[in-house]
Image 1: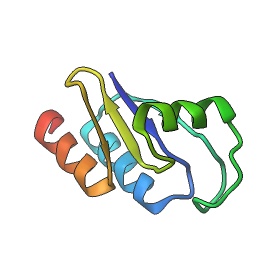
Image 2: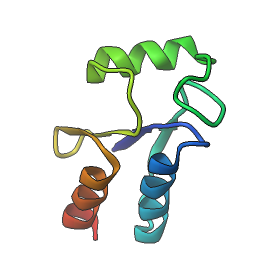
Image 3: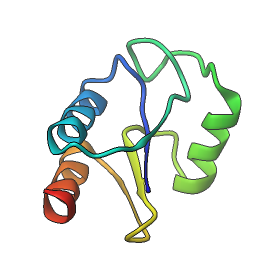
Length: 87
């Protein structure tokens, strides 16, 4: 299972979402905040706490690949991972 922590207004998150769509990959989407910038107020406290607990940072995009027991920050690294294992 793939889980993506992201928010809609983030261009780096959009890059990852587009790659997931291009490859036809199903994933679970988590939105710890709404808005257009990382500075936006946290709107889903539970999801935000999960992000920080699981990943250690308040940073998106963050991909958790449970099948490969891997988690990644940075959109370029995530896209490369998706292409390597799912492309």
